[in-house]
Length: 105
Image (tube, rainbow, N blue to C red):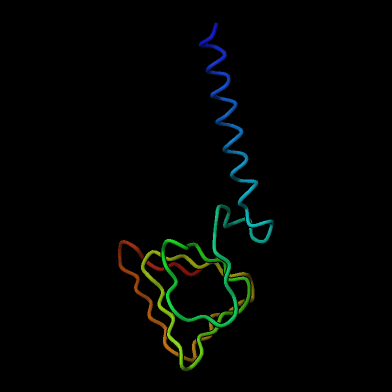
């Protein structure tokens, strides 16, 4: 009898946590295709977009100024909101490789 309750409890916990993750981290309704945890960026950018902060949700135009450099590490994913752009006036270094490409969506 105790085994039955244990299985029911485990099933309940599994269902609860899987549903909670989807609801808590779905981007607050901004873009349901991303889901999960992401980093939102917009505006002037420079420095490094790292894989450990990926995926990135580009919520507004991003720009690299003429005196700046933006490095995108291998394996980084960028999801662009509709009608947003990446404007490069400076330097863009995209370090993707065959097994870990950089993905722009």
